[in-house]
Image (tube, rainbow, N blue to C red):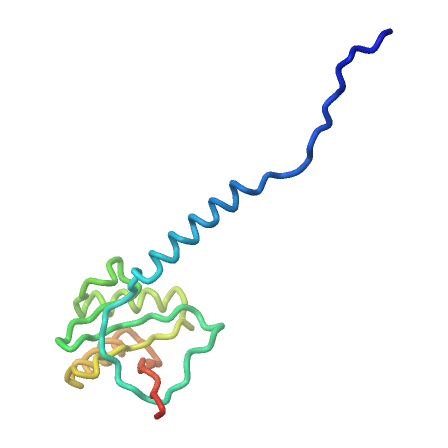
Length: 143
């Protein structure tokens, strides 16, 4: 048999990564732009104190925020940026602790609000059978 003048092409087994790099760079830019815009929780002026941070291996805490006007916000609520009434706060915190009893409970109270707001919230947490409450503060800045 006579050979035809055509040569067989060799298969190239290299992966073209240029499209993957393009996608990665676009995603990086998107995340860099949107990350600062994400604001979790309610803005309050926290008091400063030399306190230790939470342990890294602890479960995600339940965070109750009390603003200067006395409104309460719960991070595990269906709408964490909307204020919550006392009965719903007690119910949702108690339900979350029934599912995971070792979950830490943290209270963020506005430094400019009346202390009475924090005390009322602590009483509500007591009604929800919370055994221990941590108070969230800003770290002290040493001059």
